[in-house]
Image 1 (cartoon, rainbow, N blue to C red):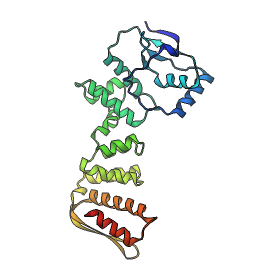
Image 2 (image 1 turned 180 degrees about the vertical axis):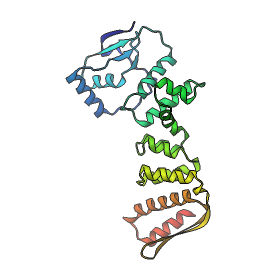
Image 3 (image 1 turned 90 degrees about the horizontal axis):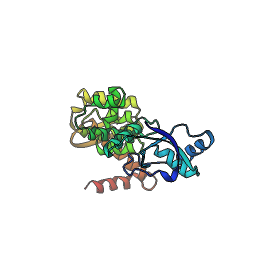
Image 4 (image 1 turned 90 degrees about the vertical axis):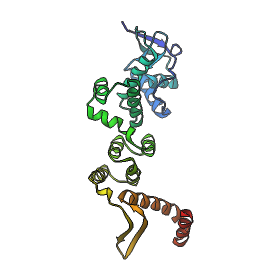
Length: 260
């Protein structure tokens, strides 16, 4: 039977395979002070050897604020490295404070550890709805730039899910729209248009009329809406950087030189 004991922090040793890697010191300190004030509300878990299975944040928080011991559930089972990792990944996914990027990584790792699993099998294991599993794994269908934006916290899991619905060649443009401030609803509308074939129209010349007799003209080979969005986003970004230093003629020359 598992035992609930109190152990000094020196008894524990961390697992180098711990799937969670990023820990904000400010958050750890808040957690540690909470444990000091209110007590340890949930025990950590470990093997009989002291190898930590779950509770990495609580252990780090305790160390940070000078807590000397923690309550721990010591399992009496002999677990292989794969079984320990399975427990760690599963426990991490259910934590509300885990980032969307880390939850995706944990789900992807669970699928890799179980080659015969379908998404419904992961859902059964995690006790969650199949639609949530689809969302959790959606970054795997995204390009590297989308995955990097998710890791940086620039987009959320729902954004990655929306972007994953279109072809990889169109994902960069959707990401650019999101980073430029598009709402989730706007992103969904664009995805629906592209999935309905709107994005398949290609032209070599685009003239965009604006108020006050202003027009933006784009010329290129086979441009669709995805390419137009990407080009305009890139130009706007460069224009914003140049605005504080250069006039419009200099900016025009700079962009011309860069295109060569």
